[in-house]
Amino acid sequence: MIYIIVILAILLIASGYVVYNLFRKVEVLETLAEQHSDYLVRLNDMVEISTKRLKEIDDKGAFSSDDEIGWFFTYVEQVQSLLKQYVTENVIDLNDKKS
Picture 1 (cartoon, rainbow, N blue to C red):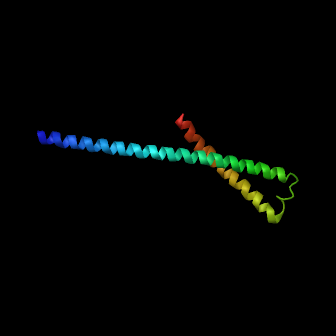
Picture 2 (cartoon, one colour; picture 1 turned 45 degrees about the horizontal axis):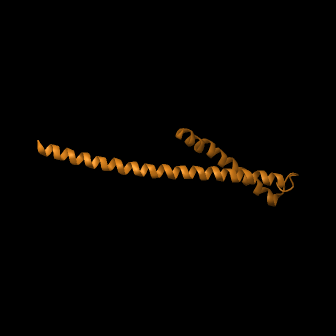
Picture 3 (cartoon, rainbow, N blue to C red; picture 1 turned 90 degrees about the vertical axis):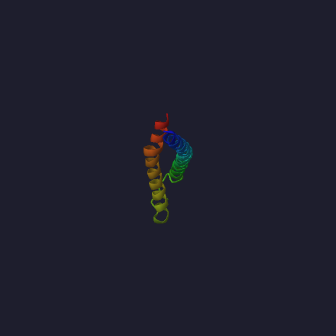
């Protein structure tokens, strides 16, 4: 009977250590995910500001319609739309779940 109690006590201590270790790892990963989502939001804001500024500079459409420069305007808009889609689908959802 005493052997069973000793074995159960050892299993309980080992299980407690495993749970504590996993809890610490989850906290680190949550912090990392939070930092990444903040970074993506800031990046999205910067790309959005850049897109607005490019449109202000090219108010007549001279640059965006040019073959040599127009690709840059197209790619900036594509990057901004992809980033905005990712941020609204993933990062905003994470912030809502935290609240």
